Image (cartoon, rainbow, N blue to C red; front, side, top):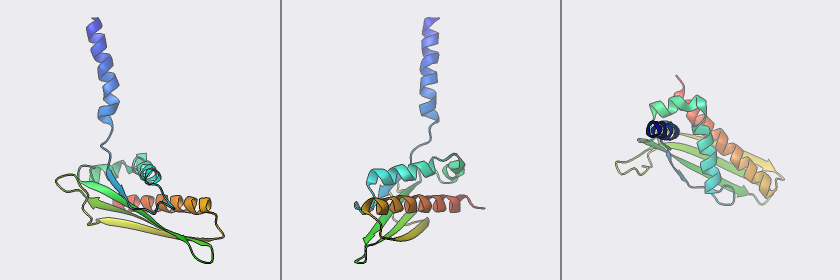
Length: 142
């Protein structure tokens, strides 16, 4: 009897891991001055894992698709923070690598005069979030 209870407990502990969807492969090609790779991955994961994005996972499985993120920009001589953020959905090859042949992409831009470095990084995060949300919305739009 104890053996059965132990087996049931192991099954229950393993169930959430088995039910978790495969993570998408993502590659970040951002300027370190504006966006760290970890921050870009966190922003993309938050958007993809949103409960309303379950349809994206069904239509575009992680085994066949991945994402490329890119945030570029900086300060002009006039001290204006300029940021561009792009998110692209790209196919995966047979080896699991991403192929740079975007199926869909979304790009956002922003300029903020008089911004500090921290404020410029915050603008970059907001623009990457906006680009990811726009891309995922376009993928599930009827």
